[in-house]
View 1 (cartoon, helix red, strand yellow):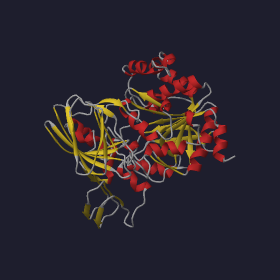
View 2 (spheres, rainbow, N blue to C red):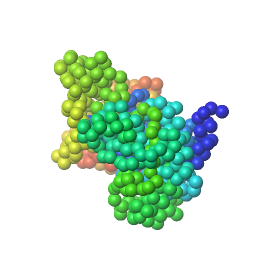
View 3 (spheres, rainbow, N blue to C red):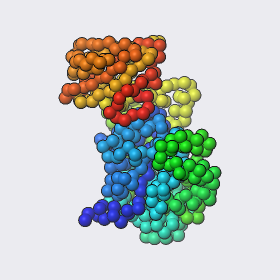
View 4 (tube, rainbow, N blue to C red):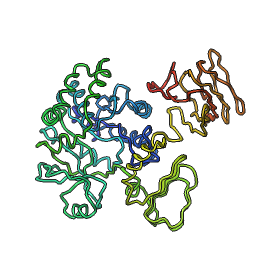
Length: 483
């Protein structure tokens, strides 16, 4: 029996809760509110969510894995996990309310299934290296949690980082488990250097392990209103009544983190001194810590030519980015927005996104290129009453069967061959051919070929929003109004 199978058998009561509802604002402009960091391929060929799920297979049984997300992101989660998890493993919050409500909801659902269950709770958008060390940490934390501890994972710092919160380790409980002496907010540079020298301070990773019953007891003690709200709908969880019941609960609870609401007050909290590599990839500067650098300390991704750059992060999603003499800078270029800032100020990107919202700039919300399970599209131009898109379908992919009340569409094939359903008629159009889809006519676009299908779609009408999609059939099981 392999070590992983032995771990799986030993931790039969272990459940995993992956929190995938974050907005990833510090990774703007690549991350947008409708397509945040966890759904992006930042550190490899898989998205951060896909990598997280893959890391946990073998640690727990698939039926003991849960992803908790918001209604606005649930389709993205389903698309990216359809090969690895069944849809019932996705729990949908009506809207994000920070980590305390999410963990409370997960704990009530898991306890209902298994009163002896333990929960490993972790974000979907962290970068972790050293799989064996990660699994060893989970096993040691599970042992401490079984004895009644709320275990938080602390990472040994290797630099005076000011972007992370810290945990000060107190007396030793087990080999790598210590009582928590104190939680410390993000420090300034001087305190961070002192923490590194001290050796007792660990980065707060935001990863936790505890019994479902234990965390519920502590929520009841320190967050009684939250406990009461969920206990009032406990019988409805896991039934058809759950979505409506959750809407009622979430309309009346406030957003609060589990750290502030429980962990900083509880007497049961321990910290595990973890031995795996970790980054929350919380800013563009973090790429300098986890990705390969050139001889001058630069991380260069995409189409870029640089002269004399030092210690900089340069990212291009397509267009050529050429620079001279960059020093400790971040330059991120996407199809519709460009970020330029000193590395030491990347934590302020979140404030910049807030400013974009206040000024009515839609670039905080949507990328120009939008990913879909069937491929992607790029908005080329739009104006009053019209919009032009470049649409690319993967081989053998197809859109939903749909119709629109307020717009008509004109499709022109640029490359590949398109299979079109228009009303009850089905036909093919080739390169340089086109077809017209009137409003209120059901239609579907499909790529029957082995190469990507690329078309130009010209929309015209009084309302061109994605909410004017009446989906009649969809192989991807989507519920949101997305094409």
